[in-house]
Amino acid sequence: MPILTVPIGPDGPILSLQVGISEPRRRAMEADDLVVPAHQTALLLIDTGASHTCVDPSIIRALDIQPSGIAYMHSASTGEKPEPRYQFDLSLWIPIDGPSLHPLARAMSVMECTFQFHGFHGLLGRDILDKCRMEYVGPLRQVVLSF
Amino acid sequence: MPLESLKEEAETYERHKAELVKQNEGRFVLIKGSRVAGVWDTYEDAVSAGYREIGVNSPFFVKQISGVERVQFISREIAPCQS
Image (tube, rainbow over the protein chains, first blue to last red):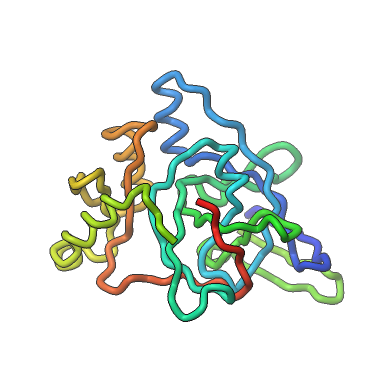
């Protein structure tokens, strides 16, 4: 079972992971002899207050993909009415034991939200956290995730 | 915020929603334009079918079928999206 220790910084626990196109899309692109975009390194804040994982448009643009869904979102900024946001078909990978990558999700819909004024590229939400055990070790300033 | 891409697909979903919910609630529907291409048990199966049948260069719409529109909650402040 992969175990990750994530330091808690001033903004909270921020995990560095790799974001790529989904595995079904990668297989389809390779079958068509298309160049598969490289994974993007993204800093995601582990956020139990987010029901859905979201990433900044800069990550989406680098992967050169089109939206595959629309979700409605309530946040501290949206007021009473939920706002529609695009969803994108992505994969998430975490580094385990050096350069090897472990899939957090081979295909999942991720919501697009702007984080340009934050010190991270998105939020790791409960759709992913539901798949792991999470321990907040305050005295050591770290969060331990076991997948 | 207007979302022009996938607008037709979202309208197709709304038109077919009642029948989809009745027979396939919780499953994942694949829609291209005004056509419901099929329903699958998992998100991964639905997008796999989308790339196989529609291709990687043409957008398609995948949605989990639900009688009640599920709203995602983000507790922090999020800037408006540019798209």
